Each structure stands twice: as structure tokens, then as C-alpha cells.
Amino acid sequence: MKLFLKDHLDIIILYLFNAVFLSYAYHRLDGFQTAGGIFYFLFLSLFLLLLLMALRYIRKRKLYKTLGHAPDALEDMVEAETADAETNAFFHYSRKCYEIYQRQMNTWQEENSRWQSHLMQWIHQMKTPVSVIRLMVQNDTKQIDPFGVLYELDRLQNQMDLMLGLARAGQVKNDLVIEEIDLGELLQEVIRKNKRLFIQYQVFPRAECEDQSLVRSDRKWLAFVMEQLLHNAVKYSSAGSGIEIRTGKEGKHISLILRDEGVGIRPRDLPRIFDLYYTGSNGRENDQSSGIGLYLVKTVLDDLGHEIEIDSEAGKGTIASIVF
View 1 (tube, helix red, strand yellow):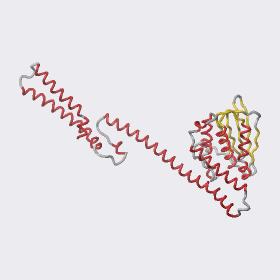
View 2 (cartoon, one colour; view 1 turned 30 degrees about the vertical axis):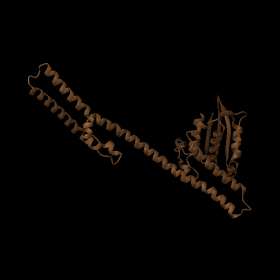
View 3 (tube, one colour; view 1 turned 90 degrees about the horizontal axis):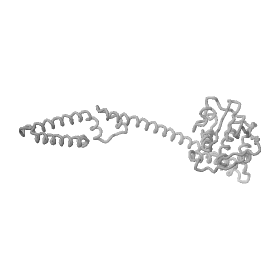
């Protein structure tokens, strides 16, 4: 009731002032012959005011009762309803806002759950090379396999680069240094950096780059993209197979084309290969798949203003093309 009176205080004051003013004006114009007429007019006005307030209170009683108590849950706000059209419209609007909020919360919770799941997987993958290096050192410090240690360190570095890239996804534009880059030269650097990966899997690249394949891009992030595509190609290729990398030119556009002889991608998975955490059918058969690499490739290339096209046939291999 207190909230109701406070909400209607301006109407009550205006109505009482209006009644007194009209009574006085009517009396001055000789409308009332006796004082009883004035009091009767005021009484009738007050009665109509009380009747109006009572009707409004009855219509909104449930609302004021709800607002008079602290809510137990967020849903309480959207469950209230009255006979007042304006208030009901407001609650309908609030209900829609709450539904949008719920959908966003569900999306964030799903993202958080996927992030935690990936973090656990990443920690597990990081522990493996650490354990291998520790065993190498503990078993025989005099006959440590330098290649094995360096390969495991490469795995650690790649996993850390992947996580760093994921953490910075969406902020790549703030870290761009655009310059003229020779694709052939950069590709050779990336191949040399990952030579132990090719040796370990017995999968070897064949690079054929045209002279002066110059593009404008960011050297660091373009190298990151090349590495992710090479890692994907190697992971899903069998020992003894090769990876063909070449550049091509069509009109004003230069393309970097990477073709592997791996397991390929099934048609049903192709539309979703750039989705975050999506591993597809191949990922379920390969415990090294995280569903992050191609997502970062697409994100980085979008920020660089380049395009990527992937064509694949299950059992025959995959062709990835970066168009500059």
C-alpha cells in the first residue's frame, strides 16, 4: 500500500487541488447557495478519487505485493503479471530480455565448459613431452638422444604457441606489422623450423615456389598460419607420404597451395572445420586433435585480409589454399 500511495501521490494531490479549486471558483460564481453544497461537492469528488484509487490498487495489487518483498530468484521478476496493459507489456518486454540473457548465459557456460575441457587436454599433452624428456635424462645422462629431446621441446613450443594464439584471438589486428614478404623465403624458414616434425612422422614436404612471389602481410602471423597447416597435414598423413607446397598466380592474386596425401576430410565435416573446438570424425580417431588450429588459421587470415579455401576428399588428401 505504501508503494501504491507513493506511486499515485501526484495524481491524488492534483485531484484534491482540482476539487478545491473548482469548488471555490463555482462558489464565487454563485453556483453554491449554501456551505452544504460545497461540502457535498468535495465529498463526491473525494469519493470518486477513492473509488478510482481502489480500482487501480485492485488491478495492480499482485504487482505491489510482489515488489514489496525481496525476490528469491531472478525468475520472480518475469513471472509477475497484472490486469494493467502497460505493466503487462513491460513484463512481456522484461521476459524477452530475460530469455535473451538466459541464452547468452547458456552460450557462455558451454564455451567455458569447452575451454576447461580443452585446457585439461592441453595440460595432458604438455605433460607427455615433459615426461619423455625426464625419462631420457633419468635413464642415461651420457646417452641422451638430442633429436628426441629437441623434438619434444618442439612439441611443447607448438602447444604453447597454439594456446597463446587462442588467448590472443580477436586481437591480432593490434599486433600486425604489414610488410612485403617473399613467400618462398618464408616457407623455407617454416620448413626448416619444423624439420624434426617431418623426420619424426616420416612425412616430407616438397616446396615449389615461383620466383618473386611477393605479398603484403605480417611475417610472424603468416608463419604461424603456415605452421598450423603443415602440422595438420603431417598429423593426418601416413609415413612415407609427402606434402606438396607451391605458389600460383591468377590475375592479381597470388595463392599458396598446400596439398597432402593424408586421410582427407569427410564431406559432412567440411562446413565446420573452422569452428572452434570442432574436431570432426578424424579428431575422434586422433587424440592430438584439439579443434583449435584451423579456427586460429581462419581468424588470423581474416584479420590479415587474406582468404583460405580447403578442398578435401576422404581417403585421398586435402588441399588448402591461401589467397593473397
